[in-house]
Amino acid sequence: MYELIQLTEHDYYIDCPAKIGLVVSGSGEAVLIDSGNDKDAGKKVMRIIQEKGWTVKAVLNTHSHADHTGGNRFLQEKTGCDIYASDLESVYAGNPVLEPVGLYGGLPFKSLRNKFLMAQESKVLPLTEEVLPQGMRLIPLPGHCFSMTGFLTADGTAYIADCVSSEETLEKYGIGYLWDPEASLNTLEVVKTLEAKRFVPSHAPVTENIVPLAELNIQAIQTVKERLKDWCVHPVTFDRLLKMVFDAYGLQMTAQQFVLIGSTVRSYLSSMVDHGEITFEFIENEMFWKTV
Image (tube, rainbow, N blue to C red):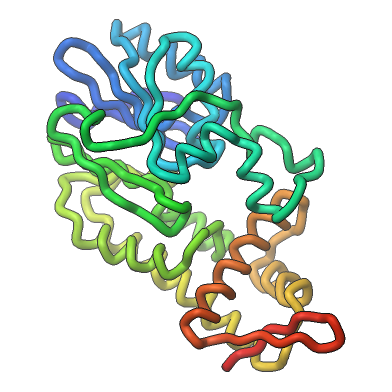
């Protein structure tokens, strides 16, 4: 774990729970893609950088989740590097309490204010093409997060963040956190057609052909939608529906899983309401969801 893997003359990644990309110039300036899940991850990354004799020029955050921004603050304090993220991702990364607030929908209780949901605060600047290494371009990857962004390098490496889950994760859990299921489906279709020599997902093996894994992720999202429609044939409250989801996918409810999967199910329902697949009604001060 935390092994540096070289892909091309300039492109690397650090093999860790959420892969960290590196693009290194001929002069030894390293641009990191994400920073790991916490301060300790930042320290391990810094040790690798120092052993190679490189310097950290910048950190490009694909999105604001704590496992991708947790090392930001340490690296920024240690090196003075700039950190960049797109749109709302930069707002969340700069104000980490917004993550548990958004997931819970109110003031998060103490057990939600942990490093898994809330990274340390860092100073984050807007991500634009102008701050990228020469030949690199942005790849918009919305769906998992508000405005998640991937990167395609001059050497043909596509760092695609969390737009796909691994086959093992899909088999084990079946449902994972999503902000916008329809946007995720669109992103997966785009990734299938992306011209790149290799793909580096954050939580799946590096591959030269992303299409089979993208298809599995599309199928998983479609399966969740179909099951929700089946469960809502008869009017059902959200709490009852959430229990059905946990039971059907063999999940164990904890405070963290309650907000992550709960938020995901709400996102599915919102999307399906907007597409005319599900509706809702209020009966005696209770909200019920029903398939159209």
